[in-house]
Image (tube, rainbow, N blue to C red):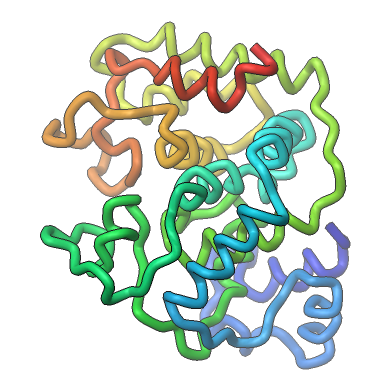
Length: 266
């Protein structure tokens, strides 16, 4: 990732005090064009749900595969290239999604979307996106590894970006970290929530709290951390997590899913 373009993107939305007000208004036209030419910032996007789905199918069938997103995630563990991580969940959430229209089937109990296909895959989707600003999603991806992981438009942007990444190398240290992450899950107390696991990961891989939170969400959406019940009381402040809000240590991890995604390295 080109350093100057990354700095332009980051400084548009973030300062030492946190989030900046104004969004793109903080970015000069010259800086925006520079970052856009480097592929890191974007013009406003107008696209329909149906076009998003069609493009996602093209990406899955012709441009990326499971091996690429798994390697990207593992490569990020020692390099701390957090923007490589969420492709794992973006791929998992969308790779079995069939081509469909937004109104083809109405969700009976919409929790994520009125589109039944998206809703059943835990994808938040709208019928259309008009002059949508992808740059804030890109900033969150570059800063922490993503925040709105199950938004359809985020998954599309994320997989578009990962498809442009060169071949990535997975090292022994990356694999060691993966195994340590799994061991930390095994060591959780039965009633530990996701916050407890986040703290156990603190010394396992180079990261801050927000980056570890992002990995927890990614593993939740990827089907690695699955709550045994959706009706437990959430731990922490109640709004800390989405995909792992009711996960407990007693749920451990999905061995089948872990083998499916990372079996080559375990």
